[in-house]
Amino acid sequence: MIIGATVTTSAVVLVGAVFLACAVEMVEALTIVLAVGHTRGWRSAFEGTGVALVALAALVAVLGPALVHAPLSVLRLVVGGVLLIFGTQWLRKAILRASGLKALHDEDEIYRETVAELEAVATRPDRDRIAFAMAFKGVFLEGLEVVIAVLTLGTSAHRLGLAAATAGVAIVAVGIVGVIVAKQLSSVPENLMKMGVGVMLVSFGTFWTGEGLKVSWPGSDAFILFFVVFYALVCVALISTTRASSSASLSVAP
Amino acid sequence: MMTWLGRVVKGFGRFWWDFLVGDTPEIFVAIVLTIGLIALVSDAAGWHRAGVVLLPLLATTTLVVSVKRAQRAKR
Image 1 (cartoon, each protein chain N blue to C red):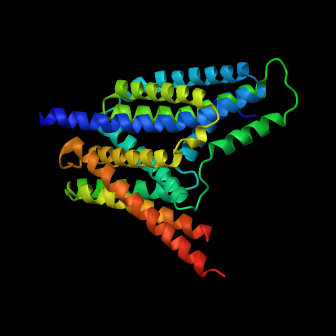
Image 2: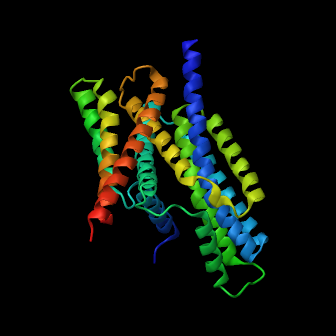
Image 3: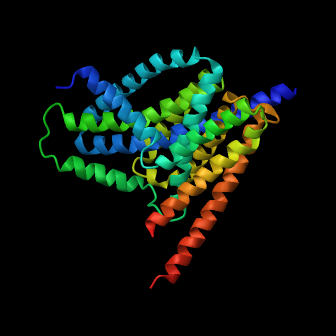
């Protein structure tokens, strides 16, 4: 009973982390593809997206089996370290944005910038290489982060299938919603989602790094939930102190 | 002239450099040092419970230092 509850807890946290990470990256990729499609036509946008998805699938096909067969303790240490670094970078950016020290990620602004960049190129040959390259780059780079999140979280937890299925659901869900709402992707609370992803990445990173270093966590897998709560509270405290000290220095400045 | 393989290796190295180090080298260095320290304390000193406290504590310190560093840079 206790084992069943523990498995369910870690699976739920894994699904949440993968879903949020994929949804955030999908919003960014979709913004670029929509901008390319509306400005230069859908053919090149779809072609660029398709080739990027094939390249990402090839990457998963090569890296996935290799990671699954790696020694578990080494895999968990390396993956844990990568997740800790990656998650801390995400949290840092999200905290700086929430504190007003960094501009919020504005999908409308990205859409406008992409459209302006594409419209500046006058020539539109039959095969639009620029539109293709823009869609490919957007989908491939954002997709690469999804691949890393799915492979690292999935293989460490020995639930690669569950992680991949969750990523698929997140991508399809955001895709459908994105197509319906089209240009209103800016209404997605992206910074809050990024903060959530960052908290989960750092939580998993701490847990797997510890497992790789043979640290015995109290309560085993269930301790991940403690980390989620702990790091969320750290973020709230850090945002509050950063905001307070920023506004104090502004009021002192002449 | 750089070969195709050379370009691929260079691109691969650049991707991981940007991904792990990027504009926050302090995070990369601190996490690597944290892992090294806990490995040393756990294996060499045989203090396996140390990581339970040290790991989240040092990860949190890394985040706090990096955010404060960015805040100072903005002033």
